[in-house]
Amino acid sequence: MSFVRLLCLSLTLFFLAGCAGRGVPQPLAAGETAAGRAILAASAEAHGLAAWRQLRDISVAYEGEWSGVVGKLQPTLIDAAFRQGSEERLLLDGSPIVGQSHRGPGGQKQVLRTVDEVHVSYAGQPAENAEVRAAAALVADGYRLFLSGPFYFLSGNVHLERIDDAWVNGHHCDILLVVRRPGLGFATEDRFLLYIDRQQRWLRRVRFTLDGLVSTQGAVAEVDFFDHRRIAGVLWPTRYYERLKKPIPNLPVHDWRLIGLDVDRGMTAEELLAPGFSGRAAAAAQRLESEQ
Image (tube, one colour):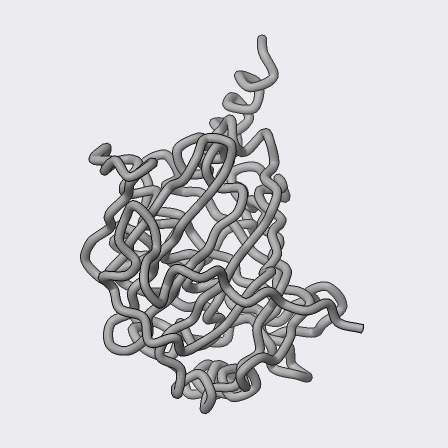
């Protein structure tokens, strides 16, 4: 039996076993608790909420490495031939819009994600495959969450409460359980655990369900945030590490870095369309200087 087939068998066995304790629990009721809301509000303030609310657009650049095993298990979602690095744009004036220009040995992949739609193209040619579009929507929404941190959860929650505490990379954290409808990508609902540092109130980790793709329904992943820097009044993680929690606990997924960032170019959605960014969106994100 091949290594990949063994991994697929492991996936099936873990799903059947339920991987107790490694998922995201279902809440007992809907609504936000005062204690949970207070912790989230404190985190947003610590991340620079006042400055965030003044931003109109954000330009970022990423580079990273994928686990080869995950690319074989989820080739459409990972799309490793195209997603080795990216330039991404986030428009905040109104309903959020995400533009992504991915690059890799396979060439260029362009994604435009609005509230209701996703447009995907490879080398300027539209991709109509339903799974490809669903995967692109899931990725775009996920990266908006990772970049915006606690701000992402300030509105639109079906449920929010503090449920526990835990240590994350040496930081004692309160754990918030959040439910959102719709979820990431085309998911009807997703659940999230936010690990918020008790001392600094920084978001240190997010765990989340992945119900936006048929092939990932029932899976759970988590992302840790490192090497924070304050730019334009906002606290940004500059290193991200993703692992799978269910069905294969602690399987490495993605290790990536924020290498460029600038804000408020005055971009428009039309400048994010395929075959590539244009106008004020075209220039690469301003490279981050090394900290001394």
